Length: 252
Image (cartoon, rainbow, N blue to C red; front, side, top):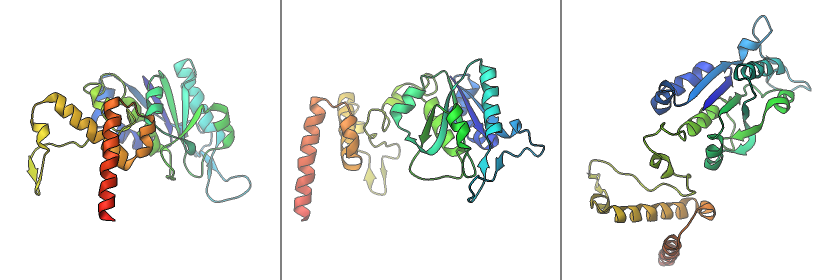
């Protein structure tokens, strides 16, 4: 898979993408990630890429020409148009399901805005979809682009040790992940649950599944409507609800 990030701050992106798991995956050729400097495509002698907004207002707006030419240069290099995502607080909120879908695309491009945004005309001309990483505003699209690139890259076969590394994680199956523990066995009076030391894999799996269900029910009950639940899961949730109700009645 190839991901191209169109940005005014490629060094910022490279400093993150060159590290840890994604950095190793790039070196091993499992995923190709390129950071393209939009400013390189400015025709202004000072390499300006922004101007004041029509109609007045605070801040500056990124111009059409550098963004469009950067994109068209990429299209020429690929020999086709990539799927272009614009990171924007106005886009649809990123979900694990959308991450899985985007990971199936061979050529993905991510456009990062800055200042007060990008001239709407180029967004209408080249952008395939807008994605938000949450209901808040950042100074630029670089951090959201890094989140998207990271979440997609780790779905590619070989990037993580095995598929269990991400299929057991929060949100992958519409459930939150079970709690994790490592040495020491006891810390500040808190011991690791003994079942995890039992060596009984079936019981451990059952325990982790129930912990995952309980965490999801207590913290993100809205996710359960999308989860694939078996008969045993439904029975556990029914008993959990009764337990919680009893606890609340005792407190009242």
